[in-house]
Image 1 (tube, helix red, strand yellow):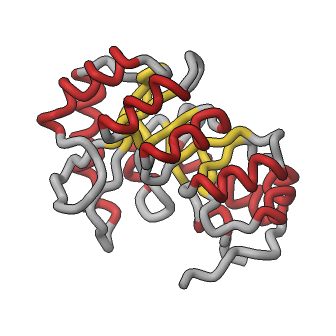
Image 2 (spheres, one colour):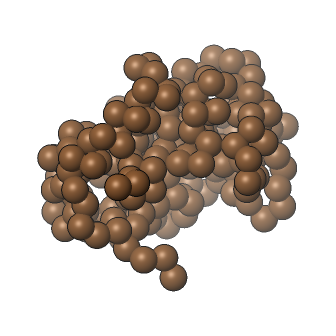
Length: 216
């Protein structure tokens, strides 16, 4: 079990944000991933200047949105079709659209200003969520036809690697797919590899521990 992150110091969070900003540049959105952050710590993020946070679980998203509705929320976890009705009304962006069942639910519970990013399994890993690159054309056509939001970009989680440079080719592959389909957003890069992702064209990075557990 992963310990929850507690006792955030807004000054340290602000400094960590500045470090990430320096590495990714001004043109990249920094979304703070709050999977392991208790609801009561969100006020420290707001004090530190964080405007957008991303959640992995629908239940946690609902609790945090109810407590701090002034923050902008995004969803980055596996998007189960049965959870779409809970998630869609609370977020400005979903990073993980990857199934026809979710597409069907988005047609009902989405909205025109909801940004939808398609999760792509760029490395073809077995058992991993995401649309196969070869199936992306048809999936995008179905998603656009169903409505429920603006199809704005792609997201990926590359294979687990000890060296961030090992992820570079997968980020480059996603960039190529986005260019082929005229999609503006690339959500790629986490605390381990965000700098490489930014070099390869990320427009959004999803940072958790690097910001929430900054070195003291």
